[in-house]
Length: 404
Image 1: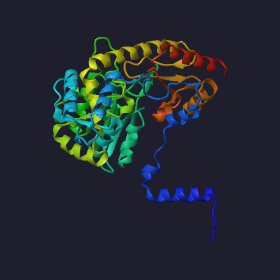
Image 2: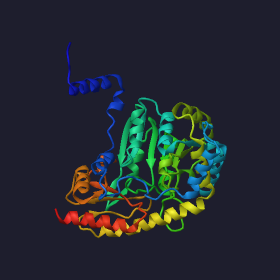
Image 3: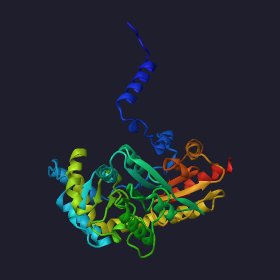
Image 4: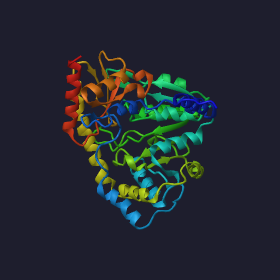
């Protein structure tokens, strides 16, 4: 009888997994943000700004709506597309921002992540060509790859710390062979914005090429231009039958990251088929979670403006402090919840982020988590309940730089 050691067993198991799993899945990279966070997990002395969420809890009345639903025994399946009353509330909310949006265009999903994946599953075949603008949250580039697509990335370019799109280069990359264009604006991590004119130009070009647009607009309310209700949206310039799918989430502007509640806006002819796809992914969303969503929508005027005002205060606290640190290059973002900055003399962002955790007790996300062209950059989520905490973080960064 041949006996093998534990290490050999793991090696055999790894080989077996590579043999039976799709190579696209085996090749997926683990999150570099998690890699940095794991280095600081369990350390109470670390000021963590690595994850993209506020440290404020969901408002009490939203939590109570879920509790009331559970107490009422609402523990059964719901409609694939979501509760009719939640879809109606979302449609009314979106109509208030962008003109008429029909309930027939709305599907409720298990978070924005699921909404994005559902859209890619619905539109992309293996071998299709997909274009994405980067740096971007890595899920948006991983999802087409999971479906077997051929991915082309068009990089934003930093100009004095502000990232901008090379519009002619983007349009040149979108050809009649391009099935899908993936965009995220306001952008995670850079804060990049699309102007209304750029959206119109991109949409007109995609109409000519027959290309679908997948617009991740989950940060649209986190927009800091005076007098604006939200950031420019493709919904403002599109027609109902355009090849456009827009993704939203309750996570950011409703302080509901852990609830996993999102929605899709799509051409109405697509919606029934999306219901079938939801059935084969998650079946439906829990009713108590959707009741919380209804409560959030019905009292959005009590929640979102306060969230936006506080996020702006966070931004306006952090950015001047960062800009005053020697060796830091950063521009003030118009939207989102992140400062994306470059440290002079620190070219490897993953190494730098890990060192900051260990040596300074400061947790940031490395730029390489979002794209190769973001090497040397760091992302700081400024969504902090305590503004003083942001200043403490900058003090740690400054002290660490001075010690080098």
